[in-house]
Length: 365
Ligand code: TXA
Ligand code: MG
Picture 1 (cartoon, helix red, strand yellow):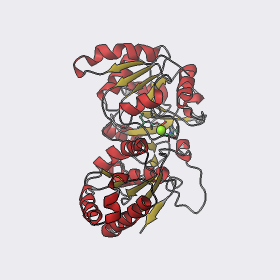
Picture 2 (cartoon, protein in one colour; picture 1 turned 180 degrees about the vertical axis):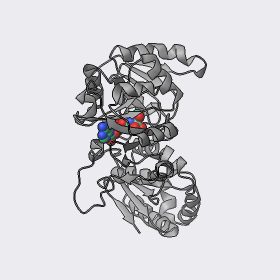
Picture 3 (tube, protein in one colour; picture 1 turned 90 degrees about the vertical axis):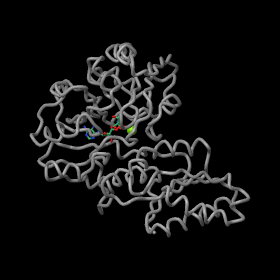
């Protein structure tokens, strides 16, 4: 594929003028990558089958994987959804615009190509001002998966959109970093109780607080005895996987730090390089241990420490997760170690992505 890709760097002062062309491209059936608060999206007119084909082609993605349709105003939802349960309306009012996708019964004219053959459609109103303005100017609902090549971590920095999508899409809008860093929560609201199909920034706890109940798709955490097929088809693909081998360690803080220390020495001694994603307070302790180690001091350049903020505030970790996995791939480390977190609130989404990035190498120590 060798398309001419037009790049727009957003200047907040005259955003509307700058986005008019990108909006026109979308309404003409072209592909436009744009920032959202979660991750960058790769958009096209959701009601045009040929436009949607162009998304699949650009991503190199299997076409049974449904796409999220992005809207800029609530009245755009009526075009897409057959019926909305009262509790779903309450949740939309509470969390939109924002990092949550609602799976609702689709209207007949929403192409199966968008929904992966399902009778439901995922709809999201993003809160990023560039995304909202672009969708509004295009005048169409915008189908948009994350703007990465299939199997790569979702891009939260335009740099990686350019890397994956130059020559594959018609336009890339550079609107700065995505501050949430993880893809939206996907919530099935077709039944009597909402069900989380993909965890995200809007947590189960936040949903329960508003409507009193929220379940989690049992297939999601793979904790069920049976091999259930996830209801959110995208979850079955190998996603977010960097080239290096990722291992995640959860447990008592000092035990994890000592395990990291031992693994670092082992990897460095065998001539390989290693990336470690660690909380700020733990990095200090680890560095003290390493400073005393002769083997380490001889080849300290083989270690790439990525600080993920404080363990008491997981927003920074969520924001940096995909970006740091990409960075470590760029420097070409062989092994990546990550400090796991407990699976409540935002930790649920972080561990869900880490399970995929590590292909299940998650150790409780
Ligand atoms: O934050 C996000 O959601 C980003 C930005 C660009 O909005 N988009 C994104 O799209 O992550 P994508 O295509 O990478 O992931 C879409 C997820 C998949 O897991 C897919 O299976 C699920 O949403 N999904 C979409 N429509 C669905 C439906 N009708 N039923 C069940 N799951 C659905
Ligand atoms: Mg994706």
